[in-house]
Structures are given as structure tokens and as C-alpha cells.
Length: 358
Image (cartoon, rainbow, N blue to C red; front, side, top):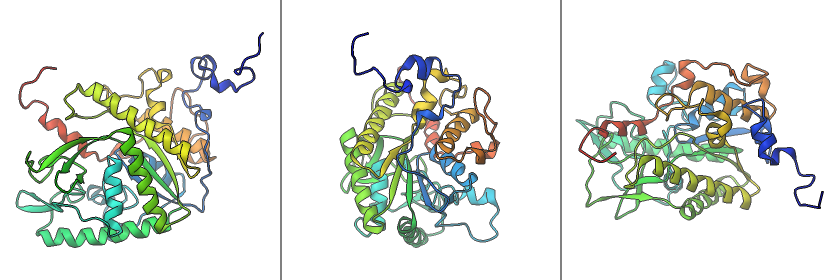
């Protein structure tokens, strides 16, 4: 055989061996961590809906996941979840875009003040930056402002104390207050507030802007904590709706491609940034679509379990997942395990309004 640069490279580099002939769906060799996670590390979590599963797996594995903004003592667990407690390491709710993540960090460090900080919700008021954490709203705008100030203090303490920040990249589409470029986590008028096309505008971020925004977020985080590391991933969940003007399936492919390319650039450029392949595991041809629910959007309990087992196996914590072997029949999760609070699905309420070509 002639000499080739492919002579002698690892078996996992070949599709025929690493994918086609792989027996286990959950192959730990798909992910080799750049840096370890250890019992004494303090971990913070944030991101889109899928990030809730990541945080839960880390907690259930006995790792030290920060809860910088816990529920009041004595609050029933289900009630606490409904009000955004203990879902992430602070009570910011789902953070779908890197632009929003950066904006939160700027606000927490006194570098930015968002426009429209308070939205009306019927006769009550909510935080426009995290509209789902107070399901019934608060009595006055001042109450919303007071709660947000306390929340931002918690974010600063969280960033100062964490060793690893875990973030799930979810979307590239966002809605802005045009004049100030304030990013919202949800379109005005979807859950509180009111959409005004003369005030608000749509933004679809590019790979370049995603990378630049995350680099700036890292820089600000390191002013609070110089030794912080970052573990990033891309959510495998498709868009619930798109405002891009394209078919939602095309918009999903574009969004995930942008985010995945951004993650690759970040992990290549920085020794303290690592990427975990949640998106690839769920969408792999080897998975044969089995990890999506009948609606072709939600990830099944088996899919979540597979992703989390690979994550824990790679860090040496597989025995803490309650199963030592995972192949075609992963350990089932409970309803609580799968119950990700995801306000993006509220966009479905508009699916049957108006007439459009499919």
C-alpha cells in the first residue's frame, strides 16, 4: 500500500468503523474532554431549554453545581421550578442567544441598561429580560426593577465563584429594541409586552457575530474570575418558529450550522473552551431518528439519557448515572427529568393565525 497521511491514524477517524459499525449508540469516544471536571469544581449552567437537562445530569452525578439564587426556604420543589428557581445556576430563565448572554453580563457588571426593562402582563408586570420566571407577574414595575437588581447581584457572585461555566447555544434569531439594540429573550407580545414594528426589529446572527459576542462575554467573565473555563454545546432541538422568511426547517439548519461553526472556532482558539457534541449525538445518522419524539422536535427521554451518559462517561462519572452500560436501551427518565421549561414553544400559538404557504 502506498504511503498516505491516513496510515496509522485512529480508528475513530473513519466513518466505516466509528459510525457504521459502532455497536453502542452512546460511544464515549465521540467526546474527549480538553480539561477535567472534578468533585471540587464549582460549575455554573446557562443556555437554551436543552441546557436544563445538562444541569440536571451534573447535579444528579454529585458534582457541585452552583445555585446562586435559591428559592425561599420551604418552597415546594414544583412551585420553585414554575418560578424559575434551581433550573440554572441563577434565575435568568432560558438564554437562547449568545448576544443575550453577553448583554446580561454587561448589565450585571454595570456596562449596559436594557430598554423596556418592564413589560405589562395584563394588569401586572414582568421582567422583559426573563419573562417566564414570574408566571403571574408582579404588582408594580418598581417590584420588577427591585427583583432584577437582586438577580444581577446573584449573577456576579455566581461568576466570581465558578470554575466551569457550561452554556448551551440555542438560537441565532432574536428580537431587539432597535434604537438601543437591547436583546430580548422572547419576542415582544409573545409573553407580555407589545410588538411595535417601529420600535422592535428582527436579528439573525452570523457566525462572526456569535463568535465575537462570546469572546466578549468571556473577557467580561474573566474580569470577575480570571481562571474560569467554558464548556459549550449546541442544542439539538429545532426552532419552534422562524421570522427569517424561510422555511422553518431551512432556518433550523442555518441556525445550527452557524452555532456549530462558532463553537468550533472558539474551541480552536482558546485552551479554556471545550465543546461537547450534544447536537451531533442526537442528529447522527447512527441514531436513526430514534431520539426525536413524534413531533420531530422534542428530544425523547432516551435521547437525553444518551447525551448525558456520554457526558458523564467522558469525565469518569458514568457510575453516578445509575447505569454502567448504555446501548440501545437507555435507562428511562421520569417526567420530571424531561420537564424542560421552554417558553419558545409559546410561538406555536401563532401557527394557525393568518394564511401562508407551507
